[in-house]
Structure formats: structure tokens, C-alpha cells
Image (tube, rainbow, N blue to C red):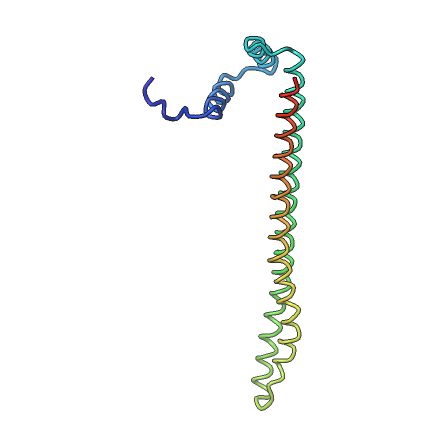
Length: 163
């Protein structure tokens, strides 16, 4: 066959087979039969196949839980940013209004700077907390996710070596 440079790893072969199975549109019962037939053809006992499938389900459930946690963290970040925006709008509107009043009614005294500075300190600390803490939280979740995947892979390899 020409153009076989795309077949460089086992993952390539698995991905192509996965696509073929998806396009073939078989029901789960025929997929189960094919899985069992393939395992038997490779000399894998039904018990080893069942154990591998249980391990796969556990890994997949854990990955789904990690993805859910990441999605929840992203959603929480979006809510915090939305709340921050809801605070910045009145901050800007009120301070513009105060400055207009200040410059139209009492040009000799610049008093509008005091509410701007007092409220501004709170706004900037709120902004800092929202924009920096969420990044660290997401990084921690992703780091923990990578560690868990590595641990699961090591456990799966150790189990398969024991059998």
C-alpha cells in the first residue's frame, strides 16, 4: 500500500480501527463478540479480558471525573469573571459621575479622587484575586489529573505483569 507513513505507532493502528468500527455501525453485542474473538485469537483468557475491561472502565470513569472537575473549575472561573464585570461597571459609572460633579461644581477642590482611590483598592484586589487564583486552581487540577493518570497506568501495567 502506498502512503503508509501515517502508520508509525500502535496508537495509529488503534485509531484507524476505532474509526472503522464507528463507521461500520455495529451494535454493542456484535462489538462484544468481536472483542472476545480478538482476545481469543491473541491468546488472552476470558478472565484476563474481563480484568482488562474492568481496569479500562475504572480509568475511563476517573478520566471523566477529572474532566468534570476541570469543567466545573472553568465554569466557576466564568462566574467569577462575570461577577467581577458586574462590579467594574458600577465602579466606573459612579466614579465618572463623581468626577463630572467634581469638575462642574467645585473645580478648586479635587475631592473625587478619594472615593476613586478607596473603592479602586478594593476593585484591584478583587480583580487580582479573580485573575490569578483561578489560574493556579486550574493548573493544580491539571497537575493532579496528570499524576492520577500516571498512577493508573503504572497500576495497570503492574497488574498485567503479575498475570
